[in-house]
Image 1 (cartoon, rainbow, N blue to C red):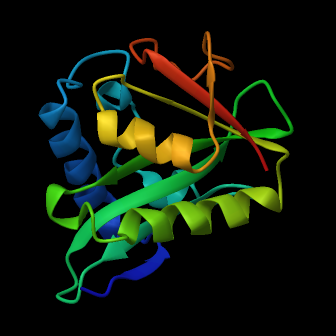
Image 2 (image 1 turned 60 degrees about the vertical axis):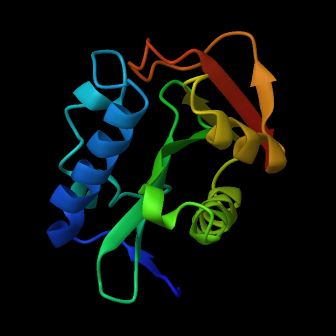
Length: 159
């Protein structure tokens, strides 16, 4: 399957919110302290429309959005960004689309930042392997103030 990756548009907000909520339910992440309770979840087209921030969606051949990823500034740091809200529906996993999203996000991040941070859940086993494959190194504790206090795994990568 070929995917089209493009910058998020206002019409995509609800679809990407749905994908994130679906994936969080799948991994038991439908509670406070995670993206589940993020007040900006349905407003990505506005939130990621600033210098140094961007969100991309992946569409399948039928125009269905199957995943997305964002880069945003890590609050409290000027030279560190955060890989944000990277989720793909089960049907898109293993297709290579996550690699396309990650490559695009990291290339963008290099233009503005020196390091990239991310936080996730330990039970997202495939995602954790994926991040390590991209050179993300484990941290002992979180950095910045993301509000995602329920995450239990943190990574950083030199860009």
